Length: 253
Image (cartoon, rainbow, N blue to C red):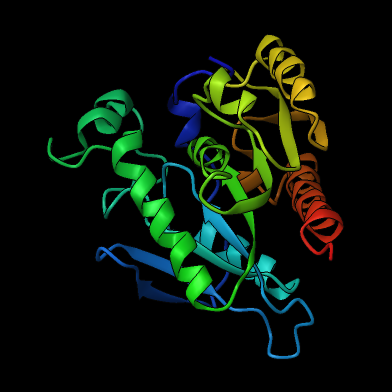
């Protein structure tokens, strides 16, 4: 395994302030999704982002990030990969994360690959139906694994931050450019695992970028505290990293 299973650090952090500007839609199969559309004058026609979220799913932090990607010219869709069963922010340890992943909160709504994969595919199909022909994948924590898994389904370029429970074979199968934002302190994506990931990804021959942010922990890219200078800086720089990567690799002719 190239990163560990989710732990408490995957569900704690700061709820960000702001009013989301996108809207909720339904995907094929009845799954919910949040979509934030790029401005009408957007020059990046036919280009969009599939945003695979962390354990909290569609909530203000992910919605506001999607809005930020859209404001930069990338229509962004967040599928509800947890099928209505996302983890509330800062509710650990009242939730057994591994039981939730395996069975869902009610015991009959698993969040394993065979259940999550079809939701990602439905999201990609929805973007295609909007006329989007090149897709960037964005994945935070839990979502990073699924961005990597779905290059085969239509993702062309990807950015992931502080990934969790990614398998080595998923890395080895990479078929497009990948940018990664990592935290100095991360029990999920440890230093040793990051170095192993580098070894595997270099062998794929795909364009690769890995930025390491000191002074921050797992989750900084989406749950960092904007009132803490170093966390605010790291979160903003990780977002800028993603935009620069997509501008360089997703917009190519």
